[in-house]
Image 1: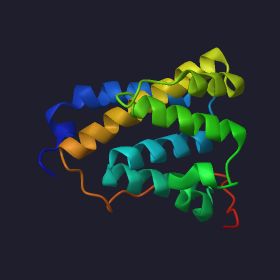
Image 2: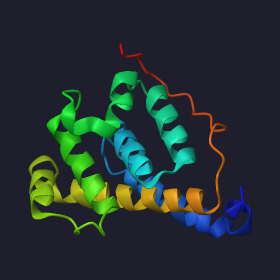
Image 3: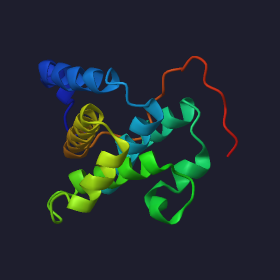
Image 4: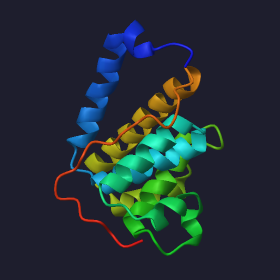
Length: 158
């Protein structure tokens, strides 16, 4: 790690955590947020965040099959229409320089999400892109993260 930005600027960490709290209090499904965080981290190449969010998703009961296939989600039958709309939205917002957010991606998202949900889904994408940039810039080392235990998680068959 180049620098521990948390020690250098704890108030910045608090601001990021406040955004996370708002996203998680929005009512969006944790499983959906796990997929969004993992997909954006894959697109950005943030090894630390990929490690973290794959572990968190598994701890909440996500299947290995869906995690392994996430980078090819369009070619698989493993995701719901709502998840597909969220993943397309995540990709478009994350890769905004590749042609902005296409109208067809927006329309699909509007079919699956209320205005409020789409606003918070977008904030979730903004947040993970911020975390990815911090992790990449300061070279956070993957492999050390341990997920919290989640109550009531049932193991899903892979």
